[in-house]
Length: 369
Ligand SMILES: *Cc1c(COP(=O)(O)O)cnc(C)c1O
Image (cartoon, rainbow, N blue to C red; front, side, top):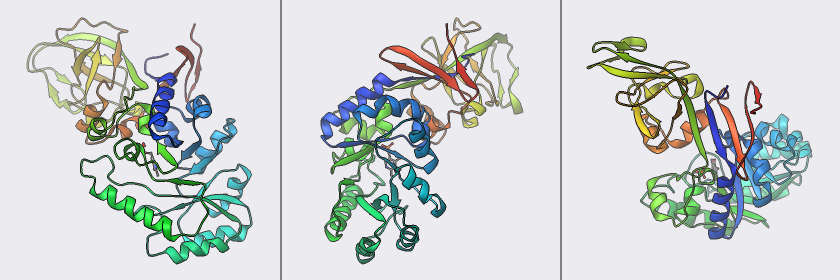
């Protein structure tokens, strides 16, 4: 039943965390939003909790799921939490993000003590108080049920060659920190790129992609001394191999017509597994270490690839994203989106201490003999 599986090596994730921490000498907030970028938030969080200080997620449900699975370290919801869910944040001891004064007043009226991180918008323009709202921020002090323990911001361009905007955001952040009037336990601004390229740490960094072993960009890779090791691989399976004649059409819409006689293989992955339809005619998978181009349209559950001159048979293993950044660029996207798109149907298989932990997808667990 392992036609498609995402193999996640938790040993490598731990190695990446330790390497980053050794350089930053700061607290480490593990960003495990979006099911840990598709790799599995519960399994990963449980297996790294001993070496991280904080967890961050995007949605309250993600935070509650971690608590329900015995995660006890602090968890911050980086995004919106509705007023009717504030009691849950209190009950589950989940930190929330504060970025609107009137909304903060509504929260305060409920009288549930909650830990709060102030979001400061220094130029990303998503969530956060801006630098002309210092008075408003300081008035939050009067809201006694809000336990404001941290302030943070978020970089817009920390992965790019030109540092000017990151420097600017960092300057605005520091000015705002100077102007606000709180005793903060945690101050954090850097994502993977901020920490690795710009070496900005404050007293905590929020790391997602790098923890999973990918560099946010080539610039970050070149400018960092940290050697990351990729923690995951997506595998699929050859289901059929055949020779086709010149002129044969392949897949829906006949967008590929063989220009010569060729050998093609059918593979058990499609867009319902998160293999984008945008890979039609451009994606490349690897069989036995050799590149095989996608021929014609990606189907819901299958693709056809070129295996001319290769020795390929039914049941062979296929590596789907050998160079994930290159593949992402072919689909006009980034590795983050390819990772988070790997669908729940794809089995996740975990390795810890060199041994398989468990393998499961949304349909259940697979017990391997
Ligand atoms: C997703 C996210 C991060 C992590 O970003 P990476 O580039 O994966 O390290 C950090 N902070 C915030 C606010 C985020 O939304």
